[in-house]
Image (cartoon, rainbow, N blue to C red; front, side, top):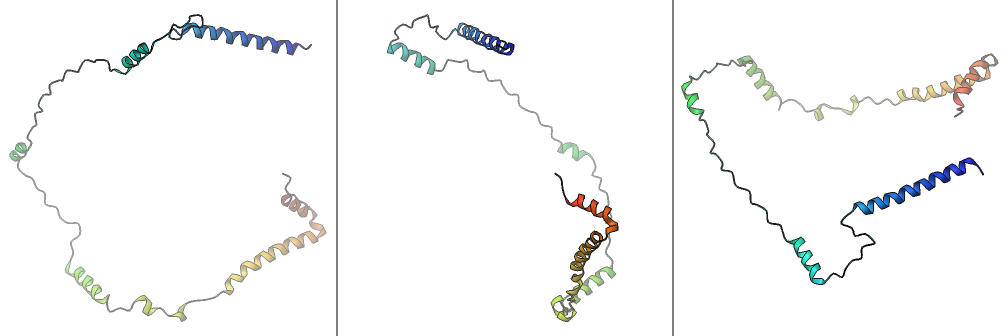
Length: 172
């Protein structure tokens, strides 16, 4: 037989032995779990009921002693402000409207109702409708293809045709 077979067989046997040893250590390490060798004695219903009630009953705990809270002393800052003299700065406005500005505003406001609206000033004849300007886009595509057809028909431009074939035909 092959040496690989014997190596694998040794690894498998070693793993089975390691698992068996771990199980034995785990069974011995858990004290709450009874071993298979120790037989369980008959347990009465009263014993089981007593265990369940003990588990459900809360254990008495010591009540925490309340800590007395000190009253907080607040400082009255209103008295301090009364002693200081009030300093008020005179702030000049950045923009001071003049009489001329008010006149222009009032004239524009009055003229707003007398001017014609956009709907009144708009005429259908003023709208520019030219659809022939879009024809040039369709013609460009035809001339573009026509240039390639001319290059492929010319025998002197075989090199360009070969490069074009490599670009258009993907290998991957």
